[in-house]
Length: 433
Ligand code: DAH
Image (cartoon, rainbow, N blue to C red; front, side, top):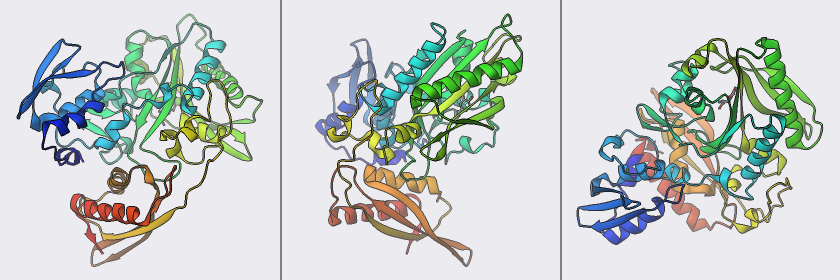
């Protein structure tokens, strides 16, 4: 996918600069300043300290680096992205959004409520982190958490790899062992996580999670039943605070590579059991990776913010969280959970695409391509039909288009569909029918 950035033909320096500029502001608002441009390279500085010459053909690596590192371009040559990286520019741009940090955004409202609830229950015990770097090592994301070598989440088709040993975090749990090694005993982490996935109203390649860990030292009771009771009562109070009333809760056995025993908490809400979070006692292997004292134990939990926010604020489509439309943004205020009032539902239309699969084809790569070309105008992609002939497989997908904030014209959708056909044929080497 990197080649789409490369293929963005930026012929003149001014164009390149215009393209780069909005991308090179890090989360602390530090701006990279270009000090000198020449035809073949440009020089940049960060806070007028670090200078580098960057060849123009290295610009995409440079961009990736800028977007993900707050100490941008310190050692560019040491961080070149192999062309095998599967992070498309559209995903990269999302790393700068950090919706959970935006005042009055539903995800921020929920994050604050969760943090406050935990702080009120256990005053001054927890540290709160919400701006940890999205790029983590595969050791942090998988190995330290005892994720099996063949677990689906490790696959290139399911996860965004920067290089073979770094990924865009697929879950916030990826930071646990690093913080444990730093001696932290109780923490709450909020952030954006990344997964290559299908497209529908509740799936988006970027979403947000809150994870927490609480370690009990050797002097505190080590009885597992007591730890589980503490975990469950903490989470039951949390649910009560979030839903702002007594809610019916049930505990179901869960399965996570890094906890045993594991549980899932479900909440009865509007007539349905809603799966709210996963949790459990951290396995000894994880505590060892975090260099936690042999006599200490601890619990952890993880919760997805979008799914919860969709239910509480009655937000019908996950793309709305990314909307820049004031009619969406103006509806919410920090500290309050209010029902979303749809401003208008614009008409949808669909187009089908049918092709013979190739070796290169993978559903997630296809979904991502659709999303890269069509952006947030695509509401859903569904496999309609599959058939086999002479050792070949044909897929037919229906792509449903609908914008969240305007009516799409026929011509516009046709153009997007044509572009998707072209790109799918070119990149995934399928034979269009
Ligand atoms: N990391 C898990 C996921 O993304 C969620 C999770 C489950 C986090 C259990 C935890 C936990 O900390 O204890 O699906």
